[in-house]
Length: 196
Image (cartoon, rainbow, N blue to C red; front, side):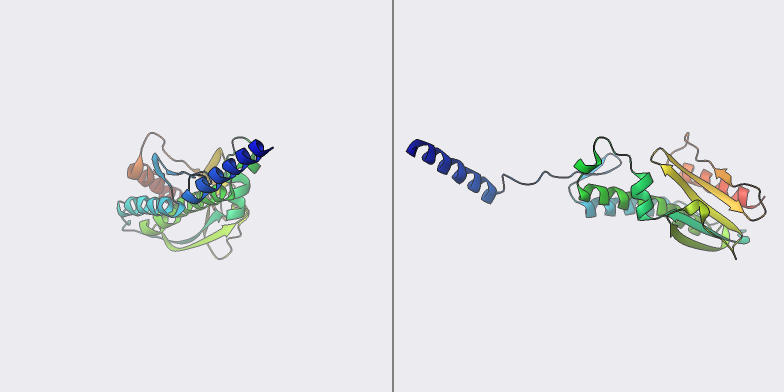
């Protein structure tokens, strides 16, 4: 009995010592931005913001703004959690901090598109809204609705629609291009569709 108690006391002492010295901690969460890794959600989101600023700096405004208005409808955070995140394995095993980061990352990444359209000055007036159903956003008083169709993690496509069109037009993203040239190509297509 004494030997068991001595063993138990020694085990508890080691466990307490490990806890006090920080050897027993919750697992570190790694936050990724592209191929870069961060131990802090804040640092990762700051890096994402830097990348967006760098991209934005390479986009120039057009000289002949279309004298029409548009609403850009983005998925809400709730919608992103429901349809924008691909879970591998059991969702319950993913830490809330990880889900919050993924939601914030996607939210900021999609939101960068609004800033790009705004900087390009394609439209005379531009408004950003968040919705659980971006594709159903009413755009009374505006000429166009630009929205992100994101029914599942594998589908995220931008569309533009007008009151006078029968159906929305897909705004393709050229996967053969990278970085600013891909973004510029997307903005040019958006402008061409709006000028139809």
